[in-house]
Image 1: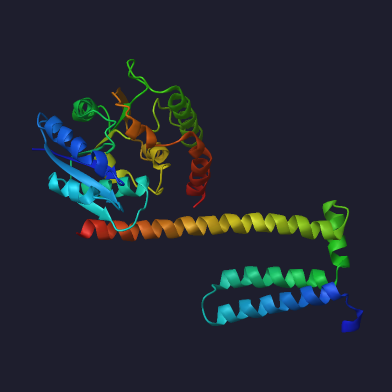
Image 2: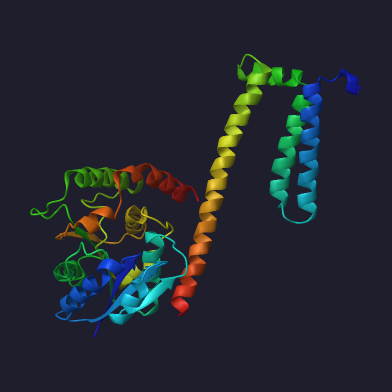
Length: 229
Length: 110
């Protein structure tokens, strides 16, 4: 049976992680794959690692906090090492719905795409708050400007990869700018990209997380550095 | 000959000589690569020439279409500072990346 590695980058998510993992475990039961839950504990100072371990997830611990990009890089490095046939990145703050995993996997199963982005904007029922929508659009333009790839949701944390993508993607950025860097890697390795609509569950908790509008300048600066390194 | 110099030339000149001596020491103890040594010693020696013979900066100013020699020095210094801050940022990014690689290796080892 083919193997799927589900990567959850987590920084101090003890408040919600047990619930997220329980929903995920129930959601992945129906998948025709052997699935491994991998929590990348990015230097959390709370009980994140303990909760993940108790839930039966593989826990990869960063001894010090290195950022979202670094955590995703570690998760993908693990998937490469396994070797996994597919990998999915999934937010650990509870904003993604495990029922959408099948949707993200579908283009990979059918060999139509190497990378699938779960897009919040493609979902017509999506109730994305106005400021988030503007922020997202600004980052989509930024992604097109820097990397020449058009997308409807450059900040989505719900992504799927097949073996080819797992093997070729090599992330250099360490923080939030990684979401845009994925598109640079997709372009560089000529990976086939497809987007599917996904549902987002907005809670006060998940609203506190993620890329805030003020981050755009810091992200532009770090993307420029990445290009010139 | 030292009596012919202005106090500002003496202070700046002494500082630049000190800087050149530090660069030489860093090359000797192996903490500075040859290309970096050439860059830094060249820069300080050029500045020293400008301090000792300020009229030469006016010559450069004339060639570049800038009014005063001192303006050339200020413009060049600002440009150089921007470049050095940029280089420092790149160096920091590379260090962060190396640190992440190390943290990742430890995470995957367990």
